[in-house]
Length: 334
Image (cartoon, rainbow, N blue to C red; front, side, top):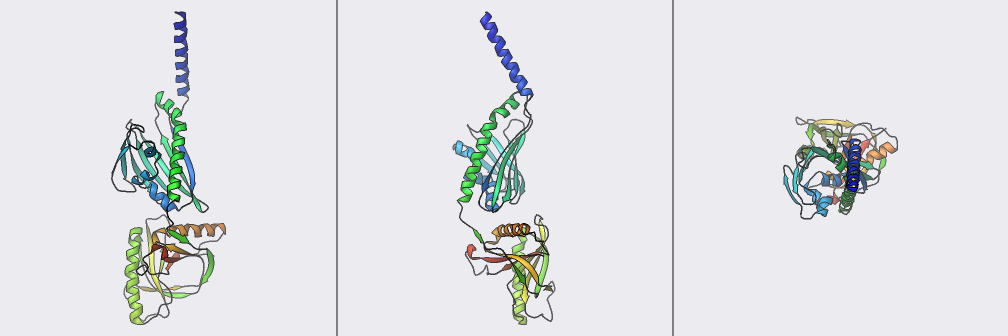
């Protein structure tokens, strides 16, 4: 009886110690790991902004190949939702709450236990590469078991995040090159006169706006025998993270017309010193060259002096291979 009594005392003492330990454990847990990926932010973002694309690198699916997922909502971005059933990973659902292009994706995380937590991916430039951080915040961990479980799963969660980031890095870095960016340099663009048209448009409307106005301008230049003095240009005014920009479609001409159609005007562009680079690839990849030029400007302590523009060296109607599309990117500086 004395032995049983001592065993009971020891068990109760251990239980008391565990409860005391749990009382000092936090009710929230944050897990975060990061990796450097030597590929464009756009390719990384594409993988984390689509829950279906998680199948390409997810450590959870790798651990349980029998996991069954169903998807609803849009294919990517805010509202995209995944529900899963897994004997190993448990059942749950996840939805995209916030999607900042090439920067961050935030998801809700629901394991069906009453709490809705958050997980996220953050993408930041690191030299020519990008650092990708994957984190999760678990809130309202109940006393004592929730807090104890939070402490016990920390090593496993960290290992899982490291494995997932390693998978993501390997998958993205194995993707074929989809753009090339030439050397960055400084040159002086001489003064010139352009036929121009401007409007406020969002990202989805830029291509149609430029095509419509370039077509009209080419017809006018040909009809009036004005002669081209350069390739088509698109000038962008506004903050990079805005949802809309003032976009100007313009074509340099050798002499001014006597009359311009309604909606068009003459733009006299002064001589400018510009930081420039040639971009080879689809127009959806040109942001990567913007990032390189901005880094060059910052590293050399230059100051942007006006709106940047793209010069379209090749005609997308004649060039079918995206890697052969050539765009000259220009940032005026002083």
